[in-house]
Image (cartoon, helix red, strand yellow):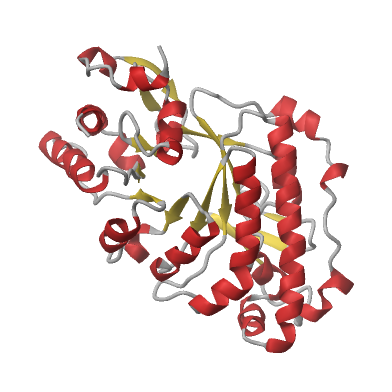
Amino acid sequence: MNILDRKKKPFSRRELEIIGEKPALLPGRPASKIFDTPISYRENALSLFWDKRPCFAVTGNDFSGLTCGFYQKHLGRAGRAEGTKVDAFGVKWVFEPTAGGSISVAGNPRFTDVNDWKDVIKMPDVNDWDWAADAAEHRVDTHFAVEMTAVNGFWFERLISLMDFMNAAMALVDDEQTDAIQELFEATTALACDIVDKICTYWPSVDGFIVHDDWGSQRDPFFSDSIARELFLPHMQKFVSHIHEKGRYCGIHSCGHVADRVPVFIDAGIDTWQMQANANAADIDRLYDTLGDKIVFQISIPEFDLTDDRAAVEAARNYVDRYCQPGKPTMLIGRDALTSRVFAEEVYEYSRKHYLNL
């Protein structure tokens, strides 16, 4: 039976039988329960992007993260266990426990004028890395959608790490640095595409890529729409097109209040946006109603009492009714909510019946 026929199977309570568990991505978090679904979680997650008709509500639990050791070693930030590290660009990172992540150490920029970047930076050569050994060590669970996350962005976040925030912000509006920024981003985008090629070769089951590039403070974007389109959009389009040509999806994780830059993400071809929920809460309904057919929004639902079964049922139904409209599927991001057995069962059953009736 093909996937379309399996999607159309009438709902059965037997689907709520737990057939396994999926370990949490983050340490200390409970494992997710795996239901006996008519299509795999991977098939369901990919339906978000290919036909916009999932079989049931897609959640973050439908995805399996790909750990690429060489990316983390050479280009990633410092992890909790590492504390500090220096990446292949010579940038020092330090893990900040209060933030739950790492930041580049300010006050020692590699350069202060982007025109100097070629004298300072040598682009990493991904051919020097032993990808075969890395792939043998880090395997993936293909029952879920396999997603590789590049935690360091290749554009604004990389610029900040190389020259500190203030210098980077000033460079964006300095006409004398514009050409050099374009050349730097051409080089970092080429590096990003090379990494995609290697990952698709050594992990052929990878389904998609998420790139980090934070574009805003808690109040506003760091730069204007015109700057985003002039300096960032062409390189993002090249990167996303490269991924799409390989039959994979591409998302962006961009924190801050950047709701007004979502049209730029869409014009770049981005498939899904991982947002900072609390910074964009006032905008999400407007964005979903006007742009939900062009990009998959990752939705965080309001908190509720996890011990209150009635509240769990109400929260599940409210999410499906509001954010699972025809042609506008979303991804549910709510790790705490999904630890509620009642919520997990209700959001599955209610959305399953909902999608059957569309």
